[in-house]
Amino acid sequence: MSDLNDLKTRLKIAKSKLKNKNSDTNEKKGVFLGNAFKLGTELVAAVVVGTIIGFILDSWFGTKPLLIIVFFLFGAVAGITNVIRAAKRMQKGGD
Amino acid sequence: MANPMHQFKVHKIGPEIEISGINLSFTNSSLFMVISAVLIITLLLLGTREKKMIPGKLQLISEMLYNFISKMISDTAGKKAKPYFPFIFSLFVFILFCNMVGMLPYSFTVTSHIIVTLTFAMFIFIGVTVLGFIIHGFKYLKIFVPSGVPLVLLPIISIIEIISYLSRPVSLSVRLFANMMAGHTMLKVFGGFVVSLGLIGGWLPLSFSVALTGLEILVAFLQAYVFAILTCIYLNDALNLHH
Image (cartoon, rainbow over all chains, first blue to last red; front, side):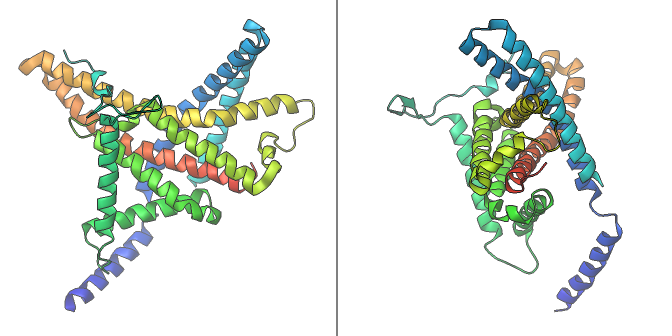
């Protein structure tokens, strides 16, 4: 039983220590790194999807180079909005 | 010298199984998926068998996993997402274990194949879209029409929103696949340098290899985490309709 009591006090000390430390800094660091990995692909993926849509529409309507260019640009814009959105989300979650 | 891409080769184990023109043979990829699944099930079964007040190692790990995911879901998607906890938990743990099992020598990294990650991503994408339509009906299409946009710009903005929505599964799958494949290729390349430079010059690439292994373990965890957290964010978009 004394073992259990000992553990109880130790737990109490550990808990108060945890509270004093400004929460989980280590976890936060991991989150930031995860976000950093996220941003790059976010931009590229939208450009790729836009270009593919343009390519498909081009072969449907037979307007070969036109729509692929337009949708490439749309994709680029979508990618940038994605990145901005992700960055905003990061700021909100950051603190 | 050893080909760095050779490690990603899928080959079948045992007899060839073909059902109505679809090749369903058991491959090394399926073998390592089974290994990961079995590892997860044994860990969680052993961890939750004795529910002690003072947890043992295995119980501690399983409780940590549970808390980690449950905190992540409540932080990013709110209370409404609680019913989807089992899905996100299994997704995270499966990807994490596939990545980690892939870090063992002589093993095969399941997540370094885009078809595997794309299947995950498409499953999530279609599931979330269907869920959005079930909950909100046709109002779900509103996510393509942000509020406060002048009417003239609306068609262009909608196209951009649609592309951005469609790019979700692509970015989700490519991220995981590219990170895993690039990391493992790099490890193999540096490993090859060690062998070809021999006893005299091989120490530098060897130290790189050691450092890279550490980095890869971090990436393996982070990618599973990012995959799960993005699933939560997409789920949040479908559950709570606003930008």
